[in-house]
Structure formats: structure tokens, C-alpha cells
Image (cartoon, rainbow, N blue to C red; front, top):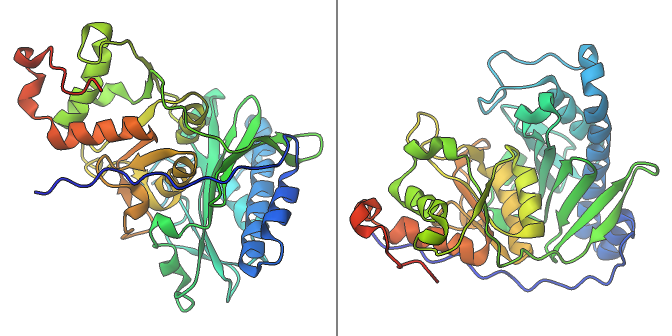
Length: 365
């Protein structure tokens, strides 16, 4: 079986000349001026940003307004995960924000089928309205994820436009609802972050041209699943757990926030790697995160920030979706770290976890 090629090199990233504090609306207006498709994308991104500002406000008071939030399905959402009232309320906010826009359809974690929007719209949107739902009740970080794709060639069936590869994305981003609300965005010309100014309700430029730090000794993984992982993933994590006395000859710290967007933002700022691999449990054989509205947007953000994102072997953005709720393993972070995982998965053999090979140095570089 041929070994897949390493992740593609990150594209050249444009250097922003915008000063911190510049409103997102101004950046989008200048970027899109005179180009019809860009203007449609800018309007859509602006509407999605406004939606996340509304969601952020709802998150703050949701515990006091539980009786005002929508009821949820006992069987969970469209992709089989437990659903919270805030999930449904957030989806409603996103859909309301896109009414009358250039968006023909929306693929959401909370809906079984794509939601039709504007007939003849030239764009489609994917979204996870609330990522990290398990953190809602304990006031831990949660967020929203989205991406924008063209309808070109799928005018008769916008739902199929949602199943293009991630390379077709025109814009992607996520919002983190934490001590402050931060929007991370790319329109294909680098990755920028914006801070929500609650007084004005506007997003203001926080950091332009974000780049994933190449050196960091942090990794994010749910280590409670170690017994279910493949030998390659176990070897990779075991070598970091071994620290300075192991083959990597340095100590590492593990982080796990149980919210994809929070992990992604931390890695953008501090470096490191995130792993949510496939494992042997029923329902996890193909990973757990969704390709269309979770992995693809995060992958675009990271490639535009000089990082990489794969399913362990193949770049996420090259994967052809087969369904709106398709699951995939996800590994993202600095390019060198993601490539190291690929080598462990494609080259390390199960017997190398035995004491006989306990001091191997195959992956020191």
C-alpha cells in the first residue's frame, strides 16, 4: 500500500496593512470592493459575525433564560450528538442572520438535511452553531464554526455544493466565547483575529496575519481513550508522555478543553498540535468530528496561518465529502508536528512499543 504524500506546503499569506482596532466591516468592504463574488462573501461573513455576536450575548444569560430556549430532540441532533437548547437557539440565530442574503443553503450540525435559504443564491454556508456543547453547563469555552463555498456548477442542487472539497472554501472561521469573544477569520489571504467590542457590537481587528508558532511543547488529546487508539497514535503520544527520558528527549504538556474552537485558538497563539484520531469504539472508526462544518473550516484557517490539518495521513482540504455529517479523524497544528504524526502512522510498527524498542531515536528530528 503506497504511503500518502506529506501535507501540502502552506500557501503564501498576504501581509495585512490594517491596524489593530480596525472594524471587521471596514476590512471586508475594502477587500471586496468592485468584485461581485467577494461582495457576496463579505456580506455573508458580516452576517455570520453579527450572528455570533448575538449568540455570545445569549450564552452569557442562557442559564437565566432556560425556559425561553427551544426544546431539544431526545435522540440528539442530526449527527447523533447530545443536543442542548442553546444549540438549537444558536442555529435559529444563524439562519435568521442569513435571510435575504446570497446564501442558497446552509448545512448545520443541528439539521438532518441542508436548510434552503435564498433561491438562486450564489453561495452556501456550513456551520456548527455551538461547538463544545458539553461545556455549556460549566461555563467553559464554547464557540461557533462556519465556512462559505460557491454554488458554481450546482445551481440546480445547492445541497451538492456543500459537498465540495475544502479547497473550494471562499472563507472560513470560528468564534470563541470565553473571557472575551474572539472571531478568527480567513478569506484566503491569511488568517486574522477580531475581538468583539461589546459596547458597540462590532468586531475589531486584534491580530492580522496570524502564524502558527513552529516550536511548542503542548499537545491536545483526550488521553482517556488511549486503549482504543491505533498503534501509531499510541506510539506518538507515549513518546511525548515519556518526556525527557524518552526518544523525544524533552518534556511536553497535555491540554484538553473539550471544545475544538478553544483548542484551535490556543494552538494558533501558542503552537502545538491537536489530535482527535479514529479509534476502535463503535461509532468512532472514522473519527468523531464532522468534515464539512468542523474539520474543513479549521483546516483552511490553519493552512492560511502556515500550519497544516490532516486526517492523520491526508490533508483535510483534499478530502471529498460523501455526506453533510460525514465524520473524519482530525490532526492539526504546526506543519512539522502534523507531518510527524503522519510518519508515526505510516512507518511505526506495533512491535516498536515493546521495551526492546524503548529508547529508539527514529523520530527525534
